[in-house]
Image 1: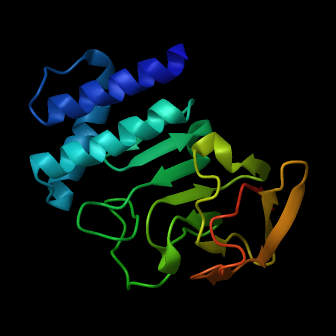
Image 2: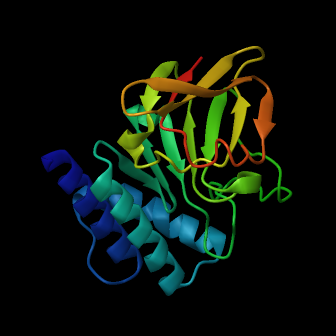
Image 3: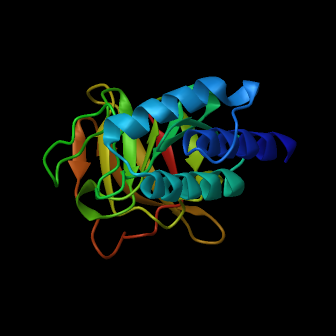
Length: 197
């Protein structure tokens, strides 16, 4: 609880300083500089940056152990799990330095597997680079997946599960490289866990 609060306070203080609402603290200077650079690079207004920061702060408050690593990104486990939020005015999540890409195409980095909040790879993007079973409740992402992209090394599988209340039921298996822009009505917003590789 103390770590989560400290991280949320540090991230909020950094964003407030970037937006000119408070002076910088020594703990947040590096993050502030990065956020300020990304706000400028993305062409965000003060109100857009503040709205994005509010989403980041809410996510940090509900999912402990994360740290803000960019204007629209949170990382866990030393960067092995990353949640990216869409930039204001965009439907699809991408880091500020990522190309926009064509709508309706996946944008998961090589050697990662990604879940997307909405169809056509839109909405928040939650990604992993290491092999683990992941309970999506740990990221506040259970029952929120509509599309996915498995861009791990060729042949690597990801298994996605629904928690039935007593056991994990397999929803689908993907083999890299592959993707689905819509999991279909039978599986939509039912993913609760996944086994990455």
